[in-house]
Image 1 (cartoon, rainbow, N blue to C red):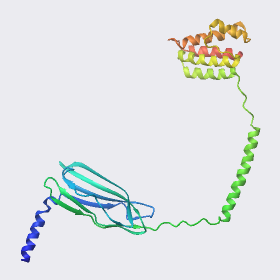
Image 2: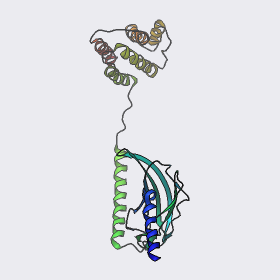
Image 3: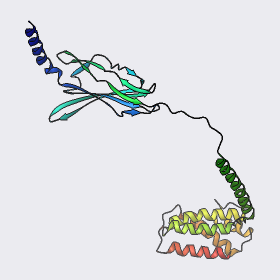
Image 4: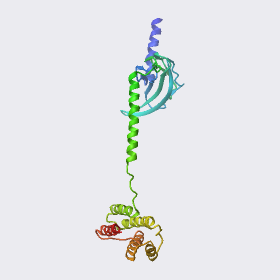
Length: 285
């Protein structure tokens, strides 16, 4: 009778795994020891040959721990093709943190499932895993600073004091930068206008018009925008310029105002020639 029973059990063991062997379980910890303020990753991986719907898991995983607790949990499932076969992998990730020092223990986890479409139940079980947890660091209360710490504090304080005096005296002796006149500022901007425009007369005239307007506002205290050429010349004469100088500045401003809104072309070196003529005039103004 005993031999008969043993034979039946052996036959059952041979027949049942045909569907159960196609799913496997593995587990891992990313470290074997950890600090009390650290965390450890515990991963369970299920793998089977077939689609993602080949197995239905009957209940959520409910692991139990000693000296550990779950900080976060996530799961994922994906499939890939290997040698023409679909392989599905399902992962369960637990981030664990200590509750006390010592040995952290993760008890075996029961994973129940049902195969599809034959609806045959099955169960997988993980193994016990452990991790060593060190004791929390003891923070000693601050004591009285050593004599050399006081010495460093005194040296730094004295150095900062003399540095403050040095910079204060240097600042008081510094000569204030002289304020540039409107003419000097215009000459500085004229150089930038030439560099920015290159041989493009339209760009040159656009920037020249802006610079001349700023010069006249600052030097003669009137706004030349929207004035006709005759009115502009009269304003410049009233400001103290002679007829020749007033007509020169007025002509440049009016021409620049027209050129910046009109398509123009210029020959090689024309912007350089015009910039040189204007610079020479204003340097003698």
